[in-house]
Image 1 (tube, rainbow, N blue to C red):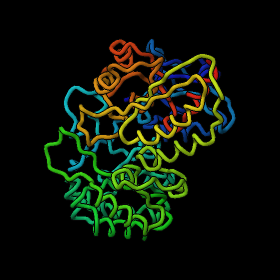
Image 2: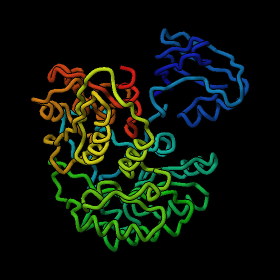
Image 3: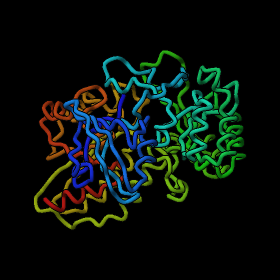
Image 4: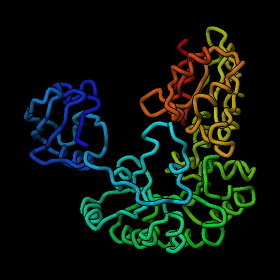
Length: 421
């Protein structure tokens, strides 16, 4: 891998210098970069010399004078310019290992790279963290990181991650505390393994790390129909017990699914603090509902329109509440459509795993001017579903138009769209 330019921001220094997509940034001030951490650090200067390899193969040396913190306006193809550190675990609950063949290639990649955790918020297990990595983290004071802890019991963690290095987790987290490296913790709850008393032990150990731990998210294990190994699904009793245990500790939140499974109302916004693990499904529904309350709805739109809100089982209730409010807009008729996951199995209830065929089958016989879907159904910056087919394919099969909500935690762009019709 190399520092290949994917896009140049309009009006930026890079555009002015005629840097283009496909160009490679070979070095900055003769320093070769391994990732965006190096790039960001080296760009903190008033004067820079960039060595650029153009798509034609020609090498250019460009001198730049800019403000110290001014960005060059380059978006790279990857945040890591050398080899991504791969995952060396074989977790009993790994979602990648329970996928069938034929999906997008990127869905089979298992990374465990501290750099991506720092730069993009991906979760890491610390099982491949080297002394060299630690030295760089401490020297550059990197963080926060997002760590998949699961359990602090060394023997149990080795069993769950199937990696002899997995038992060192608590030692690594104590090292984070010693060097003042903050982190967010994740626990994938597997009934019969790391729940109950084991969960109490894990949360107690994390509490000892005090302010180094920014938040703890507990999420239920995801089980698809393709799983060969037997794992228990989180049921109502387990969900209720987990919510009760979590309530004893500060900065610990259960994901929305626990409350849905337990048949309990979602907590108020203050339960989630600063909503630091939204992408893990912790508070995403509450955040969406709270944001919607602040939106001023138009009294009417210029022409009669009907929209179908295609949503997952997990979000159906929240989208239903929102659509009830949207019916107050004269000439607008919203309808909630829960898309069942026949492909993965009914235990999978999140929108990000909806496939084209499940969406197409759910829309059969439905009439609407357009269908609203969240961008999480698609690969970022594309129209690709996880099964490799595209939104154009769905349009062709259904004959319907689609409105993709880019910010999945807000309905503002949809309301603005309706206002401008």
